[in-house]
Image: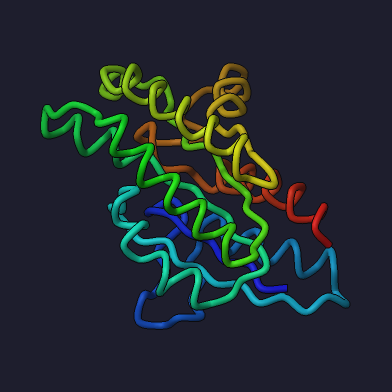
Length: 201
């Protein structure tokens, strides 16, 4: 089974982009270690195609080369925070129609190549300097959920999950800046994506 991970820095996880086999040290690497141990008799190929600072338009531009050409069995897609965060830093408005159109093109390309699609919901923790992004973020999440209902074979509601677990132990256990996951958070992402992958085995 070939599993490909597509997204931004959360997926990239410090991978060596000069090495196509590099998985980095984030949730993709954790998932790969756990899944191999759970299914020792299954032959897996793991491909990390996460790239820092990516927005949905960047993934749309790279989808044919980095996803479709690889002919994966499963694609794990996690993207969206930079479409809100980067625009917020530039004092620009979140463009719902453009985001929705690009996102739909990406997920339809994934489905058209025959892969199972796991959409992982972007997440944003309630930290002071990110609160101003929340309104646009919620609009973006609504688009992701709607298109996931139409195209995805599985959905991981990460924003909802992190909002729940961080109430008991605090946000800092899961993210230092409200956007990037700690090792603990990466384990949670990996565990929940594995639950979805197992349904395809």
